[in-house]
Image 1 (cartoon, rainbow, N blue to C red):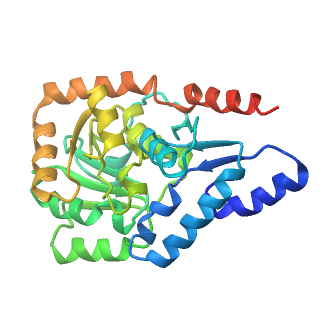
Image 2 (image 1 turned 180 degrees about the vertical axis):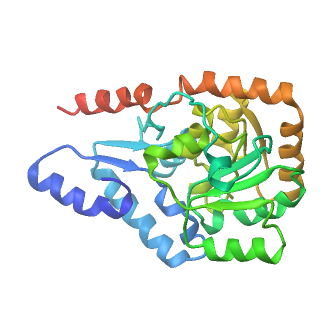
Image 3 (image 1 turned 90 degrees about the vertical axis):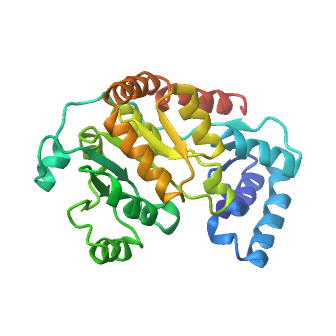
Length: 286
């Protein structure tokens, strides 16, 4: 069962077919931002999960923090941490962003890639971009906040500092990523699902050799601190975003060291290394 909304029918199917059941608590469902201010709805999902989780054979989740929370909340044992890493990609030589936007070859690119969602910190990143010096902030993707973000750029007179590229096919995304200089992963902590998250883009940036500026939340901070691949900050602190981006861009020696650390870390943080835990788990179920 992939997340809580699929668990009830999965429990029924497993019981009818007499098959073992694995529950993948991928999104930390009851701690999603959409439920933060909806206590009655959240209580319903919480009671449902407490009732159904007793009927599963194994539980999987995506981070240590979520595993610890589920263990404490429901008295579980042996929650398997299966991090949702991307497939490994080698860094490629690319200048695709500058070519697409007709930007000078020497203009630094600060990149965000992913969904344009309310809690992804994009409003703060756009506001901070006014102080990125000669660097361009490039947002690749789409989503429900796109219109509001473009209006923010227009209203702030930031059209020469903030650029949008429509969502690109996934098999092409890596070439765009490799053409940037710095990656932003500044999701906001609205709900513990986000607070304990470990976004794919963090590791996609590493595979492209991009030093990262990430949220100072437990999982992201653990990875960035361990690998020395960038910095972590409060994602709502616009001055801190501006300061850390400009410092990394102006310090060529540090940026080069972080870039190499990213490529080194990418050799470990990819799905091919992680997948064995999943096959091992299934092999124990018979």
